Image (cartoon, rainbow, N blue to C red; front, side, top):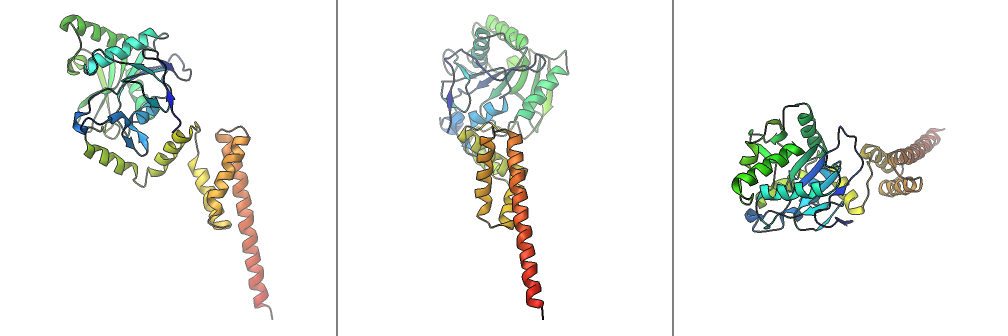
Length: 315
């Protein structure tokens, strides 16, 4: 896998520039003990060929800065790292460590997305919906995801950074430390709005959950997109691939020329697109040329077959 190890702990990693209105930071909590998985390295467990942590990092790829609260490890994109003291101090202590790491970096965004690292079906769309819900409710201090049964998911949420820091500071002042404190103390201290997404809220706490996630990934309606995303991660390719264009091309090459022509032709299209500078437009242009060639080839075959039939029918 093409992997990037993030900066030193407490140094947020910065992504692509974002407008002031849409900019947000991201905190990913990935340091739990995973006792229900027998102490396995849950963030590193693979679903659809991709580590759970990498799947969550892809969902918040638009963040201005991203901090993962855990011991540093290779990831598909560069991130900052932080760790609560003592390690294993619980979600509120981990949140506090992440907020402090963001504060130590460049100017914070007004909003911070907080995510657990065990969400196989979380995508950028849900992250954006959380941010939109927060922006649409000026009185709200956070937007939480609720699961299909209406239960709050405080670790799948967007918070106003200042409000999150204020509550953490208040809880520390009240209890002396954040270690071991339950998440409900955070939720009940904030004015919240909510969105519902039963699929995105599915988390992996047990091996049965992992098995369910792996099975769903391979369902017909999503397996191709999952495979393309995993392949791009593995190859280090950051390209919005139009799978429909390539599948149409593969079909034309297979039917109009020969079945082995399909994978070879799509490879040549990728190579040509790369030589043309890469990008979705280069892929579409190369695919269009190859598809036109395959169609011309098929037309010649049809004309040849028709001519042969006419010759056989002649007196």
